[in-house]
View 1 (cartoon, one colour):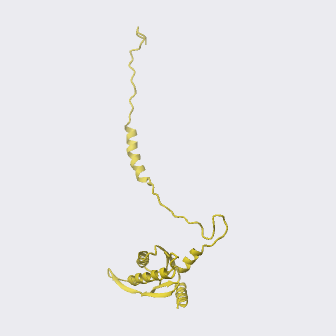
View 2 (cartoon, one colour):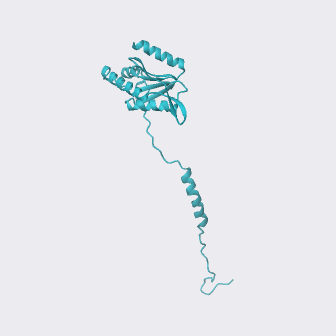
View 3 (cartoon, one colour):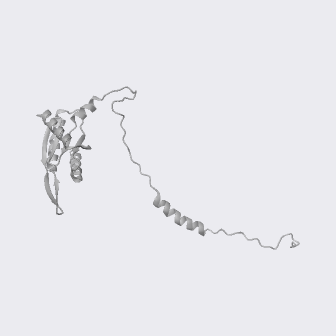
Length: 188
């Protein structure tokens, strides 16, 4: 085709239009999917302690205060029949098992008010006898078939009485019996 005298072609050049509809559809699908599958940032603080018995220089050391705290650490011993409080002062009976009717089902429970009173008097004894040693840890020893709600109630009572670092150990009944008799022989 021949050009015009002005040197320009009469053809109109069309600028291609951008079709954004497919891209917008893609974003409408991807953005909700990414938001639903994303795990949002959760910051948790993990308190780390240096390994016990190892100093910063690497030489082996023992912490006398820590070992004394471990010797004074009380234990709540829960068996299928009774609840005890084992301490450096000996083992004390706290409560026999109580049968309670919950929603038509008979479930075993314990006297947690008696446990609270026993822990309160223990706290007073520890503060009077060993005022320089803070005792915040307590171990809850149970047999494996103790109801979960009894363990949780025991932990709650311990925390209420300022034993804010409870630990849980599950042991065979024979092991718990040895703990009870050893505590009774040591404290009486």
